[in-house]
Image (cartoon, rainbow, N blue to C red; front, side):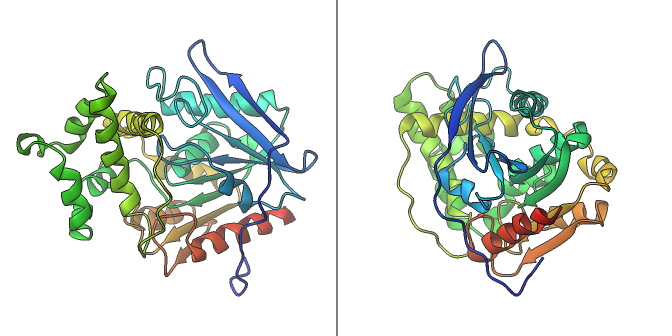
Length: 316
């Protein structure tokens, strides 16, 4: 990768196709395609769990070169049912990605995943390594108990104000188990209870995303807030359905897949130790530790490194 050059996002682009794929009797996932229909395919896996895709994520890729595919995972974004957590596990998401690849008639593709999307990208590559021509992974998250304990507790050593704001919403007697307490509120059938709790839950992660305070992106609807929080809490309660696996050990089998890892040095959502340990398990991968970035994929140094990686993969 050319580290001396600063890369920016490509210009805004609209999909040339968007549709829904029935992946089960219960779930339909939204997907879209943009860029060059005849180009090499790349699939973007969003984070969260629960967040869904947004138009800026199309712009990591040169639209003149790549066939760019984005999808909203089960329960997320424009997928149906919105916020649905039944029949929603990591193995099923991996199956959905593979079903989408087959549906689109793609032989092999580049897989790009950030944060929770990096977990999902690794799980997909481990299950379907012959379908992956390369991996671009950002803000590494391996769904280990230590990482979840960091996110829901230890991060208070750096963001005491944000942690206190999360706690302050709860009755004092419920503050010993934040996940359980918010889960009870967010899954309440009454939106007057679930919506404000979901909004407060989502705001916590948003407040620790960047090295420097970010711009206020505006507030999402109550329905979006609830759906996102429900999917995320569902996954975290279940250790993202990979807590029993040793993804570092499994990732050693991916030594034949060209891989780039991009990590913010001051990532408070997914601390750099996971990227460092993944690189140790995959020494063939290029690790780019961005010195002046947190967790967001849109901070200048991280964004530049990610676009540099997509440019580099043009050569393969």
